[in-house]
Image (cartoon, rainbow, N blue to C red; front, side):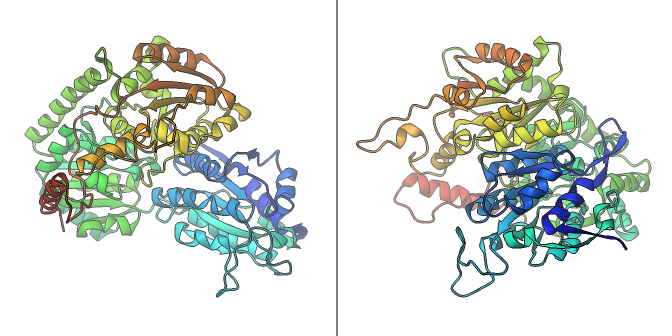
Length: 625
């Protein structure tokens, strides 16, 4: 075996630069592409000398991108992977100390959403000679603890490399975890700064890794038979499509299965865009922020077939939306397939749907059930058109009217928004409205981070989407609260020439959480900006358009929905990042949804809180235990 003398950082970077994966595209073609699309980094004393030197030498094969905030550059990397259906990743490198801990929130985002990202935080000296080094966290009780230990609970794989040759096992294990369909998630290799610079005899084979190909595990024979037997008993089955449908690229299999067996489909946030918006069996959004017609069907279903969903509380109405139904779960992860003690079918979504379709033969759902679903879907699409195009005069617009203007601006240019646009969001009121109203005609054209619902994901996520899908329009819809949380990668998008369109809906504060606050009986306080000015303070007056222009974007504050649509037409034709700001109201929302468990005080002097608590107890009685 031949060897070459390299530092640990050089071996890591050269392996990443050479690593390729087999990528399936939306048109059905397959190509071999670099597995790692690049490395986002902010250099500091924990990574500039070691990893920085290695990245500079390989920047023609493995691009390095400078960002402005460690958390948000990781959000961009996570969004890149999500937009690529987990087939490719980006890596993120930081210094030690705050640079490293700034990644922890992003690691949690990736962990909850089952998305791969390679985190490479710098760490303190393994030799401990200069302890305590600048930014070092010292534990009085554990000598081997550093800030990087924060990553242990929020990553799927963690390793601290205290010898340069550790990279030979640690990096392949990290890649194995990130490419495992069941256990996929973030991997963290914590890199002490002295070890990064240490040399060792690296086997040349390590620098020429094999092409990655993703496994598609089939279903167990007995589980398949049980699943088919359960479905055959159903007269009113309902499919809940989750993110696993997209990660598995099972949209064609889902469509074939639903059509063959005449089963209506509803979509979680993660699964939205699994079927085209106008498919006659697509009832749209389910759950707490779902549409009434989809939730009504869920309440009447006798078997719910959950495909690739982790059944979080927003999808299930805190387990109160369809407690009457028997549950069948197809999931590549046994942990998810076994939830609610339902019937588990552990398999890749695409393979499992094909196997189950063959096992069911010519069985179909009850004809009246299917007809009801098709009638509901047709009526629903007309209702969505009405909600997103009817703009009342004399009042501030709300999210539905903004969504309609954004969508219909594509038509002015002869484009189909459902095919051309990727809509991205993460937190606030907008996820509910987009879940109900956004029309996605292509898998992945709805990009919602609603596992962790991390405020501040939006702008950076839009950048990651654009890097993954440069041929599409990356449209970020974000509230003023989330925009204020994290917006610095707006400047990065300008610097990199990766144009995104950001629509800022300014309702002057945290309007979504204020509605929840008052709905649970509490007084409105500390959410809307005008309610937060103390004596001697000053009313907040933020010019978001001016702020965006200061970071290099083209920006405008429009007066109404008509001006918004016109500005969107211009933004679509521009080459630089665009920001459009519009004043909106938080008091109007789209009807729908179902009960959601939010703990309400058992004792309160406020009658409204006591009334809300009584409703809370009543809701608990409907939950599946």
